[in-house]
Length: 103
Image 1 (spheres, rainbow, N blue to C red):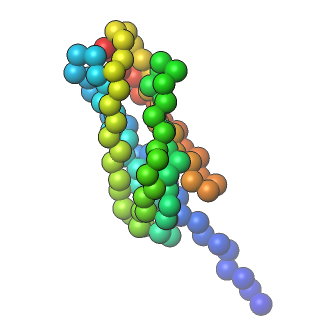
Image 2 (cartoon, helix red, strand yellow):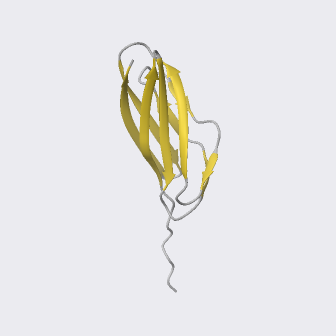
Image 3 (cartoon, rainbow, N blue to C red):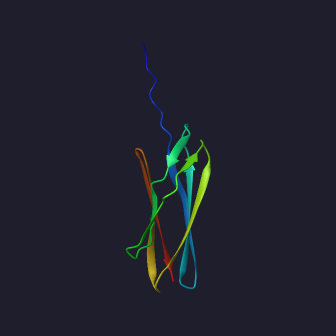
């Protein structure tokens, strides 16, 4: 008997865009389910603002194969350049992307 290998879905942070208005940073993290399976109960995402403050995901979501989700978040930042890191973890999937913003 041959057993087919288990193919898992894959999540990817396909883009992370930032903008600012005065002292408020806005982050848009685009997540895509690039794998062949639907995913449910995804909730382990976070955005580290480069100031020891982290926004953690608290609401779960589902993504069908090929479906895209945009997470939008804002945070007050002091003047300067900040490295912002978006993180996504679900089951065995662990993705990260960084960008920077100047306030």
